[in-house]
Length: 298
Length: 167
Image 1 (cartoon, rainbow over the protein chains, first blue to last red):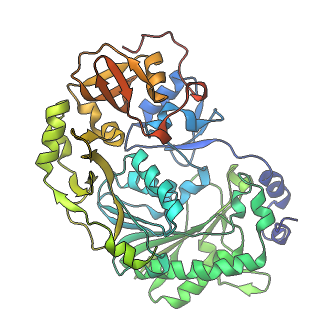
Image 2: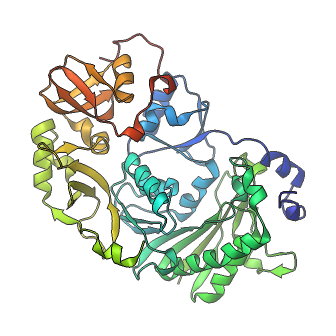
Image 3: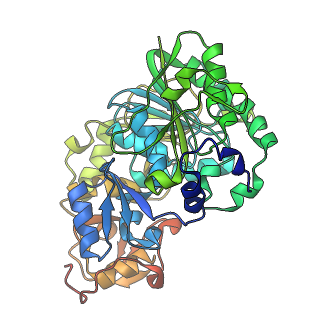
């Protein structure tokens, strides 16, 4: 069954999960504090007759009662950024501060980048890296529309990002994207164990480099939008073994329902500490699916 | 892309903040202090706005925001620059009604009587800046980037109030 049957004993309330994954996603967006303030934006949308309901767990995110938020003048002005609810978790866990040096290693198309730029209040340095030519165009376009002046775009192969030091690093890797099935059901048909294992090598190399360029005391966040443990816990566990002085911290986002990472599955043991990672399933918060791990360097 | 083509890219060279502040001040009356926390760099025919004066040694595809195009006879502020700083403008700024805003957003040229000089203007709607316009002999010509324009029939969320209330 679309590569999801293997999760029957793993994902809680599996029937509800399957039912949720075939429903379309709610329309969601993030308020961009670099260009407007929250009350002003909400009142603008109210006057325009667009219903909005901020998330319980994150005041800058909201569900919107319109099918085409991209055609709102507030989108043109960069006052909102159309972004899936659960993808806002990575930056929240990364918790960047104004004035820091931050690296977004796999940045395109820039939803998380622009969210990080906003959390940094347009100060400090945010290096947004992505090697793919076509994807960099959308990254640049989103950064410009959001009014980010603290984002520098680079195009290195993330596995060989130059030696620099960053206070925080986001490693939001390419993945099989099963958690995006509500947006594009075709992702389920494309999944295979081989694809997960092929990506695993790339993902581990990216996370390893991300961890290497983190400063002492720095934070590294690893995220994917897939359920496959091969691309999640297996990657984190491998890199914890490879990079000295790296430890896992518990991911906890108040008012957002999630499940702990998997300590073992199907005969593979990843270690008890993997429970500190977070898995978010579509039926828990009516969102896409997501995995997040938070690592801290000694 | 190969590493060599990265190396061949033109560098970002520092531009004096005062020079940029003078351009924005003389045309729009934006006070120089609006740019206190911003550094400026030039590459090719664009001036870019960035958060830091010192940039780490990396090959950059983009550095902050394209701020002013110095391609033409007159420097042209980008729509993105005006969306950030246009609210501080004290002159050469126009405020559009619903109908005028719709035409501007669709990328059109329209007749508009406004107390501004010919040249680039800050264009606002319902108190927020839409972007850059070119005012020329009684016409306002939208300078919104093509990928940002929205055709009238596709526009969402415009209030159903009659024309002229936004002035």
